[in-house]
Amino acid sequence: MRTKTKKAIELLRSGCFKEALSIFRTFRIGFTREERRTLQIASESLSGKSLFYQQLGIDTDKEIEKSKSILASKYL
Image (cartoon, rainbow, N blue to C red; front, side, top):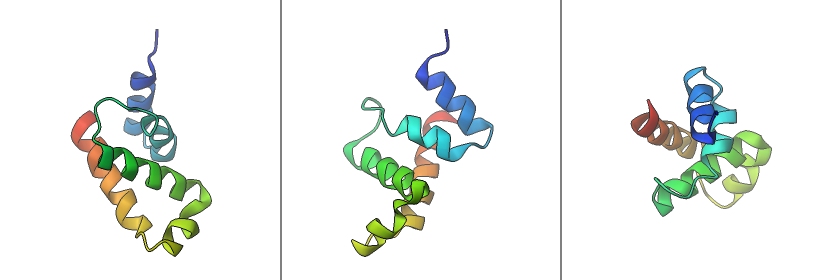
């Protein structure tokens, strides 16, 4: 049986970052509150809501890069 974690890791390794991030952002265990928020912002930014976060003064490109490093440090 393929778990949600295995599927997300496979997507991450195959280069499907947006799809992997949409799964990882739902995880509650294994991430700090700040890491979960970063993953949420990055996922929503890649889904077309980056303008909203930019209007709030959040650097979406920086959040996406932070989410990549978080996932790489934990799962790659």
